[in-house]
Amino acid sequence: MDKLRALEYFAAAAHEKSFSGAARRLEVSVNAVAKLVATLEKTLGVPLFERSSHGLILTAAGENYLNACLPALAQLTEADEQTRASVARAPGTVVVGVQHVIADGRLTRALPRFHARYPEITLDIREFQRITEEETAGIDVFLVMGWPNLPHLVQRRIAAKRFIVLASPDYWARHGMPTRPKDLERHNCMTIRALGGTVMDLWTFRRGDEEEAVTARGRLQVSNAHREMAISLALAGEGVLRVPEWTNLHDMASGALVQALADWESTEVPPVNLLYRASVRRIPRVRLFIDFVTALFQELETTRDPQVTASERPNWLARHYGRSSATQTRGR
Image (cartoon, rainbow, N blue to C red; front, side, top):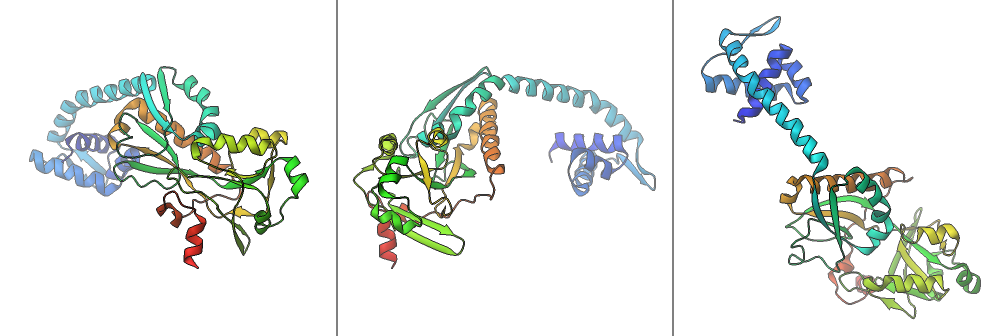
């Protein structure tokens, strides 16, 4: 029996004079309150309440027991309040492993809000290329885009992101803007390797009941660590790039990059994941960061119309240093 919870349920039932009132107050089921109070009575060997048509009435033993317990319950309540107050300060460092695309696309702009809210928490932001069991040592929280398979970590999907197709106005003027995905086959498409090494050259799209897949080909492919090179070349008019929708928002707003195929949606929608060891959730400063990041991405999700749902883990993730388009070819 959870003795502390039993005392809490007993005191609430005595105050409300009913199990149902105690249940509403504690936001639990009536059965949970009645069952735990009955177990407490059985442990003590005396009835604490008399049940009547007017509700619960404390017995003499129950009244004496309640009076004896109230000071201890009051001390526990005060301890809870003091703990909550200390959590609000929660000084210390949270070590965060975050992919560059998430840091640039979403996290960085939100950090002033976090620091204003929790000025005594220091963030140690670290870059990583691949999450392995060995590389998670010393890092409290990971923010990862994709479909990681790390059973030793708690994994929460907190958002999903679409891919969009961009190029400079000059490039589109010289080569023509595609009207459907298959048109991309005649363009210089710059491709990026996933963290696992696979070249993400299979770009899939949907518009209503129509679906099209195109194998992107071009004069440049870059590793994930060098994705900024591809973005710079796109800005210089060198070719077409598929990027997460958060990437280069300022360039799109200024007109330096222009989206194509806006009436088509990418069918590959990676989730954004929050990963951490179960034990760090009990550290107040880490919990505050986890809650902040979760709320941050929930804000993004609620502003979308229509809502975006992450797609299933793609087959090409099983390949290493190959091409995602080879999965499609093999499946035909």
